[in-house]
Image (tube, rainbow, N blue to C red):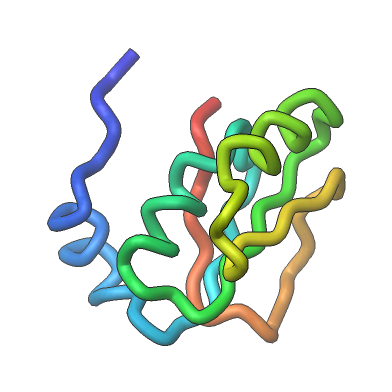
Length: 88
C-alpha cells in the first residue's frame, strides 16, 4: 500500500485542520481521524460501513475526546468544515 500522508502533507492539502470539524469517510481504523486530532481539529467524525472497523477505530482512538465514530454511510454533512477520504 502507498505510505500515509504526513502531517505536513495534510496541512498542505487541507490548509490546516486546527479548530475545524472534520469528517473522515470510510475511516477504517481511523488513522486520518487521529492525524486530524493531532493537527488540532475541534471535532473529528469517522464513518464506515464496517462494524469491525469502527470498533477498531474506537479502540485505537481511545483518549482522544475530539474523535467520534459511527457505522454509517457518508452523507453530505454541512456541519463539517473538511472531509478526508479513508483508505480503500
